Each structure stands twice: as structure tokens, then as C-alpha cells.
Amino acid sequence: MKKPIITTVALLLVLALSSCSGSGTESPAAETTVTTTAAAAVTEAITEEMKNETEEVSEIPSITEDFTGGETVGVKRGSAVLSVVDDAAARNGRALFIEGRKESWNGADYKAELFRGNEIEVKGSFRSANKAVRVSIQFNVRGNTTYNMVFAVNTNDSSYTSGSGKYTIPASAERIIVYIESDELKDIYCDSFSVNVCGDYTYYEEAAEALFANTSDYPSLRDTYADLFRIGMAVSPTVLAKPEYAELIKAQCSSVTLENNMKPDAMLDYGTSISDPDKYQEAPAMKFSHLNYELGFARDNGMTVRGHTLVWHSQTPEWLFYKDYNKNGELADRELMLKRMENYIKGMMEWTTENYPGLISAWDVVNEAAADEGGMRKSLWYQTIGEDYIQKAFEYARKYAPEGVKLFYNDYNSYQKQKQEDILSFLKPVAEAGNMDGMGMQSHIGTYMGVNEYMLALKRYAEELGVEIHVTELDIGADRSDDWEDKQGKYFSRFMKKLISLRKDGVPITSLTLWGVSDSLSWKASDRPLVFRDDLSRKPAFDAMINAVSATDGE
Ligand code: XIL
Image 1 (tube, protein in one colour):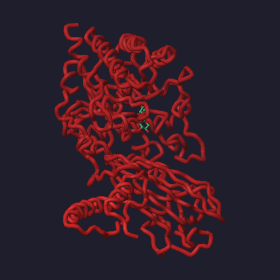
Image 2: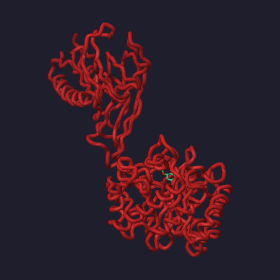
Image 3: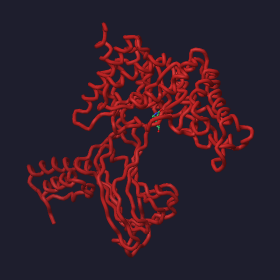
Image 4: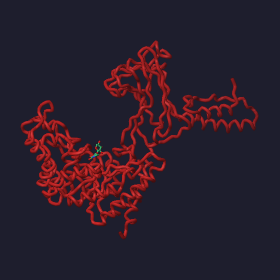
């Protein structure tokens, strides 16, 4: 059949632009019946255009597998083994056979780099003795790997079930893989699989790194607050390894806290401790080398570090509390746990002082000792040592801390009435003994919270304990309204102005740390609680922090 070429071009365009079309890569029939000269010129022009269109069209990526050719572009994921086999139940008599799966994520990988920045539709048809088969997508954004489900189908072993799902891949994604997996480990058959672009295709040659905002001309929190208090952020090695984050942190911070790496579960060495329980009975073995990267960064960039944290119920291995470090045996007694506590604190202080003299400005000696339901938390520290474990921890910390290093208690919701009473009652003896220097208000709060209630509590701690205040882990969760960013910015403004006023009134607030860098890096990412967006563009909250200083000038 002879078709006018113009129709072919139009048809091609339709194919190329149609929603989630899988046929956009087909070649056009290069034929024409037009014979007149004028028409020939037009034809030539159109043919040229058609070539261009064709080139464009053929660049639209598409994965279409029916396995009839006996091959697959899929590659094994994990320990899975892939082959194309005859299968009477399959639509075309052939299927991809995925066997040898040892973990749920084992299966078949389809590289999908060219789909970056586009919405895709993935379709697949599967049979398996597993209850369900899942198609997922994996990619990296700024060094963090994300895994998401695209769709899942309930499967049975005898006949094929198909499913499909759409997914929009960020333009900043790299190492993009669409893959077949299943929670159970039995074999999977697939008789068709496709990935296609929905709507117009945009080609991104590489991950849109440029999506990072240029942060170099931002005003600096560190400089703006220089006469008031230190500004810090919680950091991790992956964050510091990314130049965009590292530059921002250097420009904005005079202090950092290691978000996880200095916690007991990162420091204690189970293998060595258990290898010779007698030798390590009173002084559990510790490992330190993982601290060098972050502490080196802080030192080389003229920052101080808040040591976080020594005695805590969480992120502290349970084996630490057992005789011989054997969780199946008995809990260690008070005397033994006091020894272990002292040696642990001593180990932390000695190593950091020797290797990074002057770097650690403050330690969170005890973290979160107050129970949400009132009283002291019945942690394993409490159970093994007793009520005075807090006093003991501070006593040891004072004994080994170098001159001038400040010793802090740190807690969340410490503005709440009941917690105020509890915290004050167990900290008073510590303060009276001269063993503490500061109260850390973690400050994981939200815009629903009363700023005054918080500030009154803060002032009370400073007055009644006679100590400094650090805001140690600030994040302020936003609500779900459309104008959440502005509302959050206004809240930050009220919060910071009040804090600065208190500081100017003589309340010894000496440091404020934001618990993370950008919203998606926050431990509470879904609350978008920080002052930078994911691309490091500044949120109203950042400007609020900067502007609060001049707004309170003259106070
Ligand atoms: C959080 C970290 O941000 C997370 O990455 C980790 O998974 C859990 O701990 N109180 C504290 C911090 O003192 O150490 C906690 O940090 C948040 C609550």
C-alpha cells in the first residue's frame, strides 16, 4: 500500500508523542509516489524532515521483551540466574526464567539510564509459585540510593498475570535500574516486559547535577551569628563527601555533630570484646578509625565538634550490658557496669584528646534519660546501675574531660511540663556536684508548638541548673498546607528572634545545631523540617534565620 509521505510523518509524530507508546521506534516506510518537480522539492524537504524526525524518534528509549528471539537484555541481579526457556503457558511460548534467587532483591535488572527525567510506564507479565512479583526501580540521587516499587502483581504458578505502573524518574537520577524481584525466593517466569516513555521524551545526557542551587552567595549563618552563638549541623560521611554539601557546611557552620558515627553502636567493637571476655570484661573494646574523616573535616575547616553521645539507651548494643558480653547469660551487675561506663567514657575522651586536641567543645554525656510517661527511663543503664547512673556518668566525664570541654545533658520534648520537672530533679545533684556545664534542648519540634512554652523552659534550665544552653538538634516540621514553606519560615522567624532576645538578655545560649543539611537528608524527611531544600536552594526558614539577627538589633 502506498501512503502519502506527509501522513507517514504525521503518523510518526503521533507515535512518538503518544502517551506511553511502545511503538515509537518503528522505522517509517521510505516510499513516495509524488512525481512533479515542485512536488519533488516539497518531497525532498519533507523527506529531510522525516529523517530528522526519524532520528529523534529512534532515540526515544524503549525496552520491549517478548523473549521470542531466545534472548534478553535483562541481566542477573544478585545471585539470580537468567535464561530464556520454552514455556507452554507463555503467550508466545517463550519466557525469561529467573532462578537461583537467594534474597528477595535478586532477580532481573534492566538498565534504564536513558529514561532519566521522564515519566515511564512499565508493564510485565509473570508466573511464579511466589505469592507476588514486584517490579521496582533503583537509582542514585546525589550519592543516595533510592529503591521504589513501580507495581506488584499477585502471581500463581500455572498461568501468567500482568500488571503495569508508572513512575517519574528525577532528572538528577543516575545508575537507573528497573528490576524484577519478589519477597519469596522461588523461581519467576516472565513472558513479556516493557519500559516506555509516557508523553514527550526529554533526553538528559547526564544526571542533572546542575539541579544543585549555587549556594556560594548565600549569607553565612556562622558569620551572621558570630557574636551570638555557634551554628552547627548534623553531618555524615556521605554528606561530607559530596562537594556541594561540604561547601555549604563550610560556609554556614562553625560546629558540627556526627549524626550517628560517635554513638556507642558505632564505637564499640563486639568481635574483639567477645574474643577474650576476661580481658575486656571491664573495658569493652572500641574502634576509632571511622571517626577520622568527619573529625578531620571539622578540624581542617576550623570548626568545633559536639561529641554525641556517651550514655544513651538507644544505638547502644545490648551485649554491652551482659556479663561476658553474652546476651544469653546474666545482666552485668552495678559494679561491673560502672567500670564499663567509666572505661568507655575514658576511651572516648582520651582518643579524641590525643588525636584531635581542642576539637571537641562539648559532650552529650547523658542522652534522653527522662521517660515519656514520666520519671526516669528504665533503660539498661538504669536497670544495671540504678538511679544514680546519670550522676556517675557526669562524674567520670568530668574526671577525663580536658579543661574547658563542656559537659551536657541532652533530651527531646524537654520543654514539656512533666519532663521539665523530671529532668531538673535528676540533674540538680549533678549540677550541684559541679559536674555539668550545659543543657541540650534537642528541639525536634513542629510549627504547631508554642514558642513561648519552649523559651520559658529553656530559661528555666539555665537559671535553675546554672548552666549554658545548646539547641542541639533543631528541626521544625512543617504542616501539610499549600503555603507550608512560608508558614514554616514565619515560625523559624519567631523562634529565632525569641532565642536571640533571650541571649541578649543574658541567657547563656552558646550553640544552635540544625539536625541535618537539607530536607530529604533529615531523619524526619517527610516533615521537611530544615532550612534548605533538596537542591540546596534556601527556604524561607533560612532567610528567617538570617534576618532574625538584624531584626533584633538594638534589643
Ligand atoms: C537520629 C539520627 O538522625 C538518625 O539517622 C538515626 O537513625 C537515629 O538517630 N535524638 C538524638 C539523635 O539524640 O542522636 C537522633 O538522631 C535523633 C533523636
